[in-house]
Image (cartoon, rainbow, N blue to C red; front, side):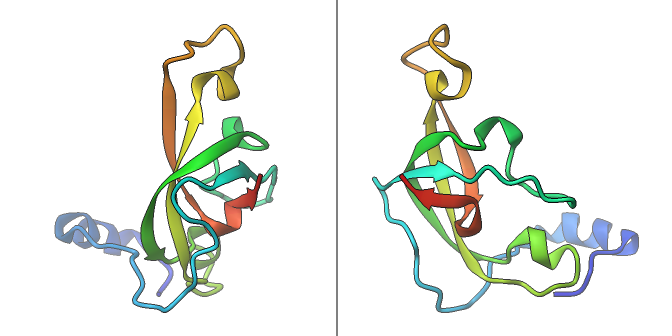
Length: 116
């Protein structure tokens, strides 16, 4: 995957380009598995939101295999891996004053997760 340049953006947006990768990569997790979002602080961009780092969630869905943006955006290769929809309760993210009925799903790559 080439490094994204400004002149490439319009065409990618118009065609709905995907970072899905046709690679045979074993999933580290399955639906229902309990996970913890890693508490990482890389010096470069990551798609792992700070407010979920170190928080516990549950795998809700496996979206399949995609290029890992943390490496592909810096020209270090696709590093294909599974992307999961991870469900976090509102209370896990924002404390006991949050609604016990609410939750938030966040799409996360294998490298962002550890088993709980």
